[in-house]
Image (cartoon, rainbow, N blue to C red; front, side, top):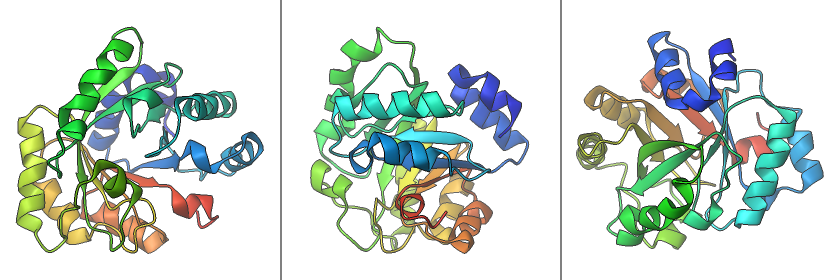
Length: 241
């Protein structure tokens, strides 16, 4: 990890953009607080891949207490920037460095387009968390995911590339600072390189890709297609990375 990322955790977005200008591939490990004990999380942190640049913390049904505990343990064992990836506004903890301020653009459930965001303001305005406005697109990964169940929305078909591209671009036009293409935890297959490439060509903001990435080839394919930051969760938990 570069010294910039270590020394400027409160400028997470700026360091991501700076890394992109240097053609640096960014890599995040996602920890779902529900899936770890204190001991197992500590052990996993000792095994972080050397190319890890960020830690994401969150899950669709994790509690605030679980999230807070996980962030505290992570902060004790690494200086990497810790970014909240909340499934609900009640999952917010002030001890992280930043939060993905997600808007689920791929679905039409107002709760996850704007209502959750409004509910979070009373908490966020009194914190030092860096807020990262993020357009979140759920892409079909071949299996019903927790995000799909909780949000009660359908993922976008990987066959409809034009719709995915237009949704991502609409997110940028709305002022989002990041676009996140998500196949979902436990996806049978990741977001295709064709989709990643098409979206990257259309937008001018950083692109995050996650879900279903289990092999080094899939990781490299995502980067080659244009992903700036790739997120891995289940594969790391199972010892693949």
